Length: 152
Image (cartoon, rainbow, N blue to C red):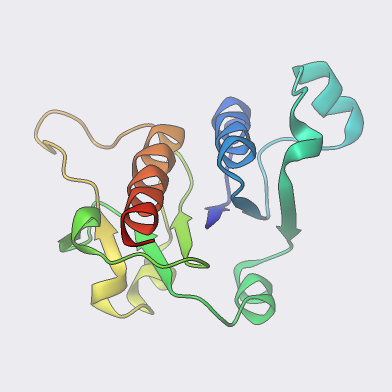
């Protein structure tokens, strides 16, 4: 599976997502701009001892990400999604795309997608605005892996 973070800005969330990818053998794709450094010095200082186990690609923008990854279904996660993530049938090689912690995925990205590929994680929006980014990534990635393991 592929986990994609578009414009992530909070280092611990990306650190948690990278640990999740290392633990599951999933690829991590980061779309710039990033709100932090991921050079060797910053990674050592953060104590990310698993960083060399992360299959990581960084892209300068969303368009480059799309050009370099034409295959595989891309699922976009937003509170604006009309379908719950549990209604999707995930396949190996799919991309799970999440937006920035503060404002989510840009409207231009969401609006350009087929509606059945914009998914939500059901929450009580009258109580909270959203869930933590790395929690969302874990919820959806493990559901996708559960589906793949159930079918094999």
